[in-house]
Amino acid sequence: MKILFLISSLRTGGAERQLVVLARLLAIRGHQVSIALMYGGGELEEEARSAGIEIHQLRKRSTADVIPFLFNLSALIRRIGPDILHGYLEMANLSASLARLIAPGPRVVWGIRNADMQHANWDWRHRLVYQLSTWLVLTADRIIVNSRAGLQYHVNRGFPPDRMAHIPNGIDTDRFQPDSSVRAARRKEWGITLDQPVIGFVGRFDPIKDLPGFLKAVARLEAPGLRVVCIIAGDEAQRAAVRTLAGELGLSEALLLPEASQALETVYPAFDLFCSTSLGEGFSNVVCEAMASAVSCVVTDVGDSAYIVGDTGRAVRPSSPEALAVALDEALGTDRRALRQMGEAARRRIVTEFSLDRLADRSEAAQESLQPR
View 1 (cartoon, rainbow, N blue to C red):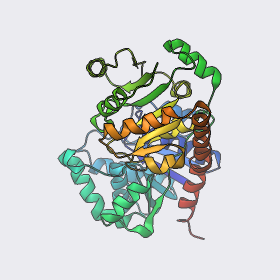
View 2 (view 1 turned 90 degrees about the horizontal axis):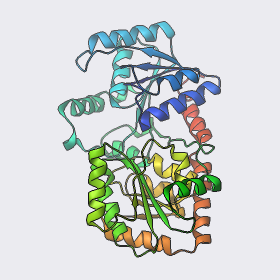
View 3 (view 1 turned 60 degrees about the horizontal axis):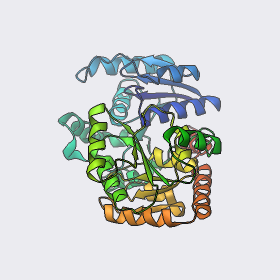
View 4 (view 1 turned 45 degrees about the vertical axis):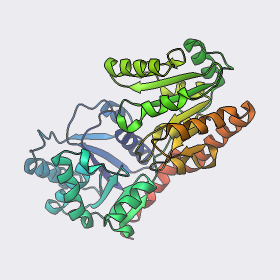
């Protein structure tokens, strides 16, 4: 199969990284895979090239650069003749369908990566793109959604269920795995002993991640020696705001804010518990990465988080520090052996359901089903 992916850019992000991973997996399986970019300069471009993926720069100049961009994309389609034109995210999905009107030939696949779009928080451009997508949805031969919550959300809004497929993200379980030596080294660096309880939090500084709710829940715990490690992607002002809130909650001594640039595979193994307090979510990569590292998770029941965790952790309603504190307290109150067994079960669940092989199998099947027999 010859597959052309289309995305706005390969700047660092969850969807962008998943695309690079998927493209590499499909290329390894013998498919001819390339990626077309609306805008260049992304940090992940070199990673894609080093994996043998050809990158096509469409050099879209601005949001208003529509007609010239579509003709450039159509010319690329005619030149390389893909069997599948696979959009990634809303603007790319819409562009793929419009380009096929000019250059018929490939089957069009849309990739949707969200579960519950808060339209009130969007500017008019995003709302327009979504509205156009609802009008043009029947031009897509297949619509791939990475979360069950996202699939249901879009079906409820009129997307055709017979054209939709649920394909969860894939997690590199060789990269993310338990490692006792990494655990010991990282804890030593942080000044934490091996027997101190540690709760981890990883995420960007964003209201939807509800970091204040997480800290308020932790402040309710009575766990001797507890340390709280937050890996937060944000600027210094945002990190200062976290320190201020922690101080107000009496968590100054318990809180650690390591640099967000640290390789996460060397961070998760140092945790006893991982916590996700998102108010909205599709498919949470960080929850899966922690689970792959054999860390049990306490999550808010949004998007697919409770489904991902299954019976290997705990899920509570969002926006409730009280309920979260109870779940964290119960988990920390479990004896060390039982907590370790929960972590081992979490890893088995990721390996079985959300591995890279499973991602490749599901993606390959969804796209091959569009090919004439």
